[in-house]
Length: 233
Image (cartoon, rainbow, N blue to C red; front, side, top):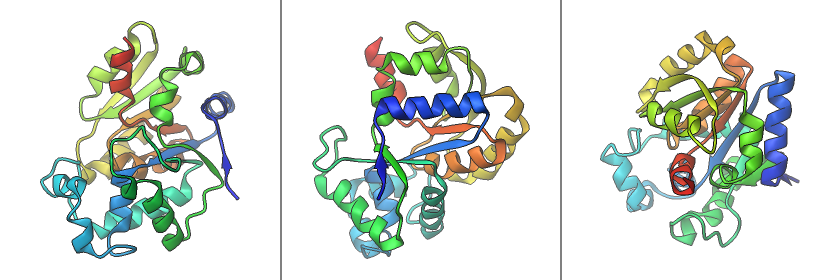
């Protein structure tokens, strides 16, 4: 039986992992991840490719080639490896997607692949956390690595009021084909950061557990949290 952690509990685990220099990874499963996982598992490909997200992914707007069974299998392995898995609650209202693409589909694909995470949290942990003063407290004084298509914009947000955090390094990332290069870069600078915040769409699910493994650091699927930070400011 999975233990579901509150935002406060997740932030405390992140804090302890950084202080003890232990790896920790957090991945989040929303509608996009569900669609990737549903490919030829719980849905035939024709059903998958009808979805708006899948159409956008096929057009190259999600940082992946799609359809993509290799990506699906890598995502399954990453969810198994992750320390904490973010999942949407039943009848979620935070993510703007049809209900059939949310927790209902997560349950189906997790059952199919026998995914049983020991620790879970809200899939929108990232959005909730950045509005919590504990987020700033935990990360203040820590060296942050930002991985994103345009990491400099997230760096400036994190370093500005009310966050006033320290971004020690950035790695630009725009497509799945950059996974191995990004892992090599993260490993090369592992002594320069304490926590990686990864905003790369579904690719963050692949990257977070692997970065934690190769660097021994904390790696968080940060998703669209920066957009919520802009609203706060």
